[in-house]
Image 1 (cartoon, one colour):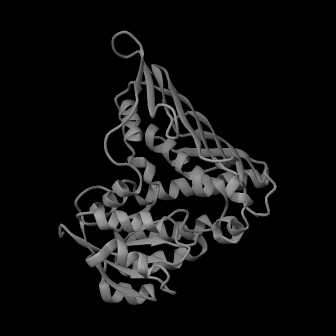
Image 2 (image 1 turned 90 degrees about the horizontal axis):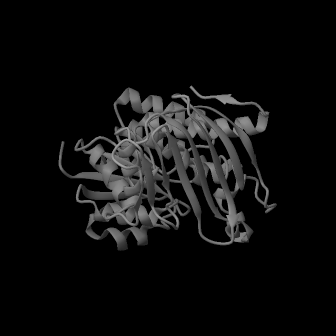
Image 3 (image 1 turned 135 degrees about the vertical axis):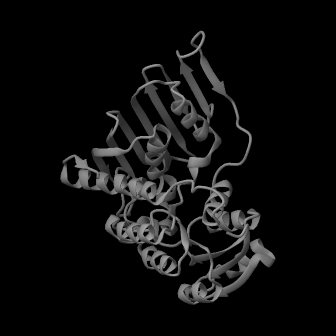
Length: 344
């Protein structure tokens, strides 16, 4: 495989995090060129500014871009309702795919795409970029090395601002419509923490129960609050709170307890990582005040590009992407039916 590859970006005016994606592609040494597909052309100026000479062409149709530019990887950031056909076209063109979550409004649509990706030997990677954050990598390492022993339980919360939901401009966006987005806070933000719970512990969510609703009463038809109980395949239980509650900023927390200790991640405020273990020497609380190195979309996009170039394994595989979505949609089913839902 070549050391540099071409990436095709499939997006439109409301494609989420496009600025971060373009900046990451511009910085990645593995990206030799970028082609852009945007039906209305509203993102072309930004792409030209950020990518410079890396931008090899702009198109109004993803099919035309894929046929003429022949990218090795497609980056799809679109309204969730519109994403499946674009991902399908990219897979048909032989591309590996990095897709902005949730990339569907029905999990069955993503399941079909996952089957196609697996059959073609292509990566289908959902943009769950927190996986590569330094504090997450260290927490995963500690658990893999047995510092916490057998995992007993965990607690998650990811809380953002309610303020955004009060703006009329937000009410018009696809994020505020269940038909266009598939759901609200849980599918847009809470999914990150559900994925991290599985990634850090190395176990799968196999059953969920819980509640979702619009507790703030804003004129949107997606949930601003979710409370979910989780059962994992290793016997662990957990809870997750996912909601828009604050006036500004974020509160976030991942805490995991095991037979030999515990660890805690506080991404937004506080210490990024604390842990305690009885497996070596005198037990004490270890605190990490800061981590060196980048986090967020830049290293994640670069990792997906390198995986598409055959230079490294993907930061998450197709099964990981599908598991995160299944956990979200099963939580919605549990809330609607009032019954716990099993996840295959």
